Image (cartoon, rainbow, N blue to C red):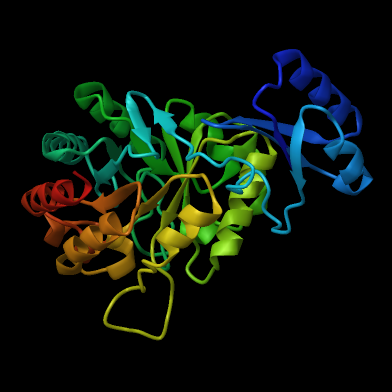
Length: 330
């Protein structure tokens, strides 16, 4: 349920209303927009009398929200959320470019890549320390040592770092990580999402391989229900019957998500296509469709990469993508 307040509502009136609603056992979310203030109610709203709430002097309208996702709903928060990561912003016209290798392999590798992607325009550095792999025999990442190398690259370049978490027990190792990524396979790991909801870390939440947009937003709701509203959604392609690409990038998810939620949406064309030569056209398509950013895999020697070399761009190719994307976003 949401209550839209009149423009002339005073701070004291808002405080009194909030106190009364909380006394009913409801969670109250206040959204101060450019033109109106919205009070969002989460919990057992059946106990609230619509007519009584509507009759209050400060209330303009009252609406019930039918969608199961509440905090992530644009009706709760009409203006785009802007997520701040260090000196970088994502959302509401702030376009983010997250780039780096699939896996952190060595000190020389990650620092070299970090310097090159920053020079091309990247605003954040990505790199896998813990790697979920289909085969148990594939490279699983450097784990804690990988995070330390990412922090070293951050110290040199100033780029905020993005890396994936596999287990809530690993959270202490992520204390200095700027953005914690929840990968596609963990999108519905609800216990992990609950733990992340108790943190104030920015969470980059990837859509699952076979999950709907509604399910993605419900996963975001799990995090937000814990009090953490610093979430960036990521469309990374879904599994279809097509075999010429690794997955199928759902470009239509961008405008749909922008309509349904206030959370920023970035796109990962690398995992979506699985083929380096398709990354640029899909990156341009995502930018044109209104995405708030891109997440692109870059490796200084893709042929020798320990993970996902086939979809990784060289620094030169990444530079070309950045220049082309800038022409679209202006």
